Image 1 (cartoon, protein in one colour):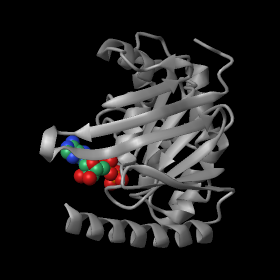
Image 2: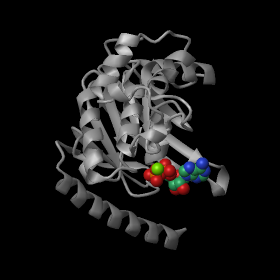
Image 3: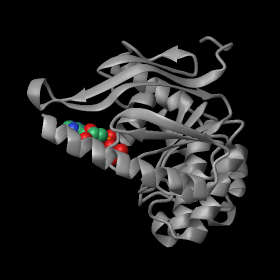
Image 4: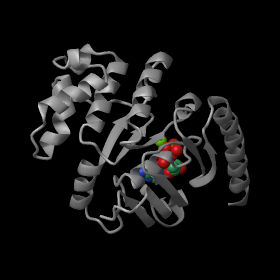
Length: 256
Ligand code: ADP
Ligand code: MG
């Protein structure tokens, strides 16, 4: 691994086409983007702009059709499924909208699952430290069904940070939460930035305002960037993007 690499993740001319020939859909049309270590980036864009596809390619969950992805100094291009599984397990944490906790396992067991799957013995003291950090130490014996949505997402955050991954990918992490609970979850994600690099897909301008930088996607391309974003500035930009994407679609349909 190249430790001098100052980027946690780098995409170079990444294209992703679903299907083949005339029915092929260009989900990413050549995306080049860098994510510096220790940064918090939000990725935004209208529905269908390629956000999920971007996240899957950047996190090694899917192969780009062409282009390259380098994550924590490792080039994902040409890696087989075993290599990718190992890389995701050791270097990446995931937080999803739907929490994805195992219902029959306690909070503490859910948090240690990734380590157990990797054949490692979890360090109980460290597990308890992390549970304390997300405010759930006293709930460690509870089942997910006994927790609120916000508490369940905090379990998912603990599970994502426990292995100290280089990068945390979050896909709409606050999509299922109310405003106040969302703020707690985003605050926690913000706190893990520095040790971790966080990349979050969201359509919520308030959520995006917790990031250092917002990258905007439209029709599978990067169409803009905002640094030190405010929720208002993000919302304003999104309004224009929506209109821009609509116009683009109408003109292409006419010409195709
Ligand atoms: P977003 O997450 O921004 O809504 P996606 O990355 O899910 O966008 O999708 C980008 C484009 O790729 C859309 O046009 C979508 O319909 C298409 N797409 C996504 N997944 C598939 C798939 N498995 N097969 C075919 N088309 C897909
Ligand atoms: Mg999506």
